[in-house]
Length: 378
Ligand SMILES: [Zn+2]
Image (cartoon, rainbow, N blue to C red; front, side, top):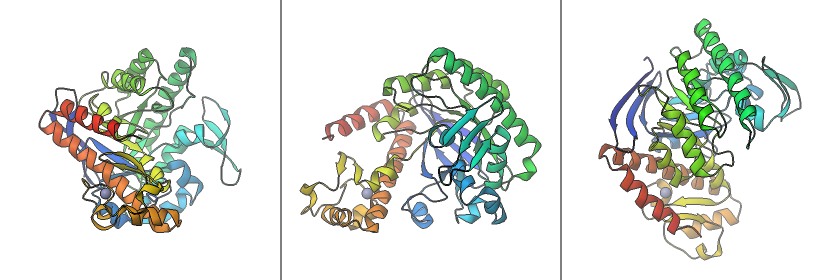
């Protein structure tokens, strides 16, 4: 199946209801993608992901490259077969991890030299190398290598990184085209990434340059790095305004539940974040009445479900008292159940957002939802 994107309906806010088709199936958009860093969405079996209705998840190129190694995954049939996941997969370029997690040694126009966080070994990530790895993994959607910058970054610094990002995007595109036969997933597509820091003019310029390179989809990177949410929204809007309406748009690494409708209202079709699973492991649970910390003593005798509005397996089965006990006792099941609910909660918001767009009522939904989330905060 060839990659396809259809916009089915637009909302007065600018939000789009759509559908992406990849070699591994259909994704209803706007979509939230759980993060499966090392070939697993932490705490969730692939069976659970299916039960939750996950249509696409994200894999991290940096982690899989270092361990177990992309050539090993290629030999084992690609990432889908390796992790026994038949749905769609998007892989990042590895750039974000190299620029933020790894011991970054040197960045040149050629690529980024870094030390592995696992064993200190030295590696050189180039645009071509990033695509070679993603082709071995065989994701449905690959991402170009971009230069991720620190926050805050002044105009000159952001402009330099933008220039390099465009040059790298071109090299990624050319390498992917020339070596398409090397991908473990025939029909794999490559998205460009808009950069430009917190400078709206640079965001527009970056979008223009990438549109000239003609990608099947576009991401907006470098947001939610410490800036106020309003700035993040402004940068997303500056980028999406310049991107073609017939291609999907993906804002990387966002966000809190109450922030998701804000991005969608700016014409964003895809988002991802580690928040639901990472917070779950720390006992921070998202509910329709706001966030709760399950380790709090007030839940010790609470027989109610975690979220009475949630229909997930956890909320149908277990009490807050039991979830608190598991967390306090440091039981493995605590992470499993908490992750299950949090991912269910994020997916449920997306389903409600899609429904609201279908009725042309996203603005009303957002106001009500955000007020409810805010009221519930401690
Ligand atoms: Zn639930």
